[in-house]
Image 1: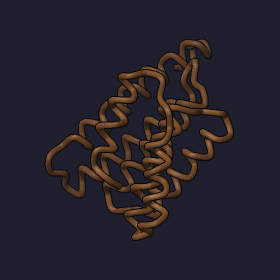
Image 2 (image 1 turned 135 degrees about the vertical axis):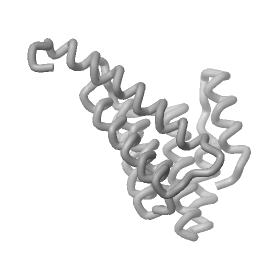
Image 3 (image 1 turned 180 degrees about the horizontal axis):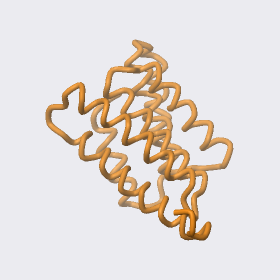
Length: 153
């Protein structure tokens, strides 16, 4: 990659970010995950975040979504403290850059799930309510959120 321009490298990172992100979902959607699957899921989520950080056309939403994914996989592998850490980062990214709608709703969603994983039920319910209260303009995005929120924190 040393002979590539910055744009070419950024495009390569974008393609890798997409690939890594999609491969995380393969493991998330797996009916029964092993401990090795959990480790692999974490590696893929970190790889996706790495590539998105360097991708052409990246923006604050890419960072928010990368740390949301890190929150999700940490919770799935039984690490709610780390899940909350990344959920906090996701919400901070939304607040710092004025991200609303889809990204803000999911920042509250991942925080709610992490808080529940830590046994902090009242806080989890508050975050859950905040996720549900976010208005999303795109009906398809709203349907995705509604489906995810159909199962409580």
